[in-house]
Image (tube, rainbow, N blue to C red; front, side, top):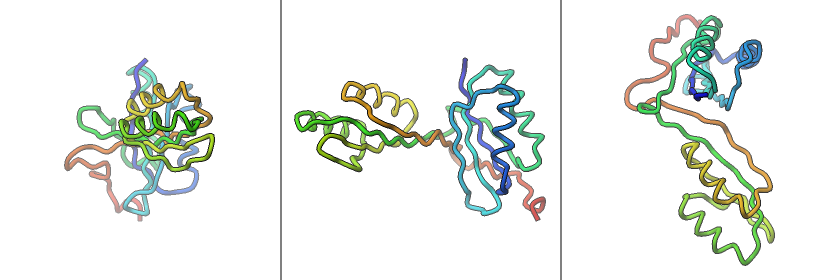
Length: 172
């Protein structure tokens, strides 16, 4: 099963995200991650959805999203022309004797220690999802007590923008 990253520009209205997640649920498509935020224009929200499935599932989802009136633009974020990032907060069990190892891992992965107690440390790490996955594999032996990930967000490289080709007069 392949993963696809869909980015969409939505009207910034109440209930739009509920309709989108309902569309996925009705079609039995799995959302691996979803990240929604405001944009540079208060009339729009941006959503990044990572979908697992085949090309048929991708085609069906994009066709169904395109039918929703509040979805203004949909694109597929391709690996070769997009930047993908995610944020991870992870609470790790740490004893005094393993703190030196933790500092080394922090430096290798460019993580930040954002909280430290006598028995735990919370680290913050941003980067490509594969980098976060690798970091989690490395710190697993220390004991991951808790973690939270934001979900993937993506932007196209260069001049290409998601809000290109949006008719702003439609919103008035």
